[in-house]
Amino acid sequence: MPLTVLSDSDIRSLLFSLNREDVLSLQGNLAEALHEYSTGTQETTGCCHSNQPQRISIPATNNQTTLFMPASTSTSRGIKVATLATTSEPSRNESLVSILSTPSTASTASSPRTANPTTPARPETPRSQMSDLSLAPSVGTSTSVPSSQSTNPVGSLTLLTASGQPYGFLAAAELTAFRTALAATIIFNRRTTVHTVAIFGAGAQALWHIRLALLLRGPEIHHVHIINRNFARARQLMTDIYTSPEWEDLRKPNDKIDFSIVSNDYGEYNRLVKEHVRRADAIFCCTPSTAPLFPPEYLTSTEGRKKGRYVSAIGSYRPHMIELHPDIIRQAVAPEHKRHHHKHAQNGGVVVVDSLSACMKEAGEISQANLTPEQLVEIGELLMVKKASMKEIAEGGAGEVGLRNWLQGGNVIYKSVGLGLMDICVGEDLVALSRERGVGNTIEGF
Image (cartoon, rainbow, N blue to C red):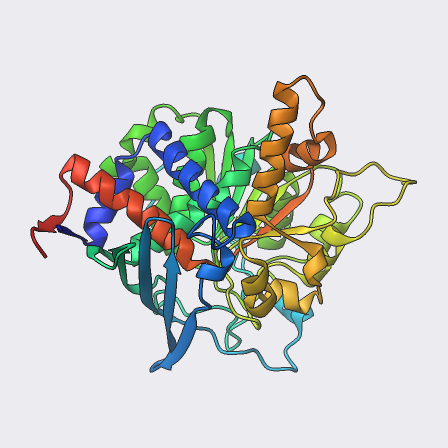
């Protein structure tokens, strides 16, 4: 059997060649695998929960961790081995209040659509601002991985057939960022309104969340706000979006989108982040943070609850790491009262997760909010209910109206710590695509 070998550059080239139909196909396959993970049995599918061993973590040097993530589908077995930088646990005496209220010097820069992105300039209106927020605290207190250390995983994914024959060997970095964003945009693509998108982070995860959002819903998106502690990195991402040949396919169809950057180097970041979070229809959190990225009242106050949002948190993956304040999580699962003095968007009473067992063990947002398994629902279970609802509608029924309204327009929080199953499922598809399109290297008769 031939063995296909794909480097990160091969995978990046392949992924940037995908059109909307390709992405929907990959996303549909991933959604089906997650559905089988949550609802299948060993007798019915290789994707079921019982066939997905817990990942193993081994400490490495220089504050790094190596993860071993075995997994299986109905057609493949495999393991991803990845080493990534980790964050140290914050001091017990560290004050979140001081973290969230750190002052910053005021300065702004314009969008590269109207000015040279390498030359900061003060904008005339808030809409064209490219200010920058880092919600990290003052010098000496770190709440995320230092910018000199990459948070992208370095490693590989090995794929084998169900009978154990190796057929794929893939670099892990680009694959991991893409498959995470692919899962996070499953619910995003079902949202009624996606006019304004806010992204915390400017690395590979942020890149793929932006690109998939534009591929899936680009004509409906009007504003994209990139919020990152390092202005230079965010500016490079935006420069790539506006000038790189890789983004050419998305520039023309989406040339009216207003992009902006917010970091602690530029502007009144507290005001700007509050404004961007409040106005956002979707918020993608893509940072390895150990402190909340913004104060909870931005979303939990009466004003913050007036509109429904989709909030995805995929950057934190250990119990001491956290992107969303526990108060936001607790409010999401709080019972709805029949009488309200103020109008607010619908809550679902649960947090959506990729894996209940993994998130109960590893997700800081879940553990620090003291959630129970009954307050979580796997995205695969939601897809099962959605299938039943669509069938009922096709037969003339009303379907699950409440569930549909919540997923499309209510307050939905999605928390992911990542599954090896995602890597295997997407890896299978990428190997098939690479063979069709002549990308990568193939060793015959391996």
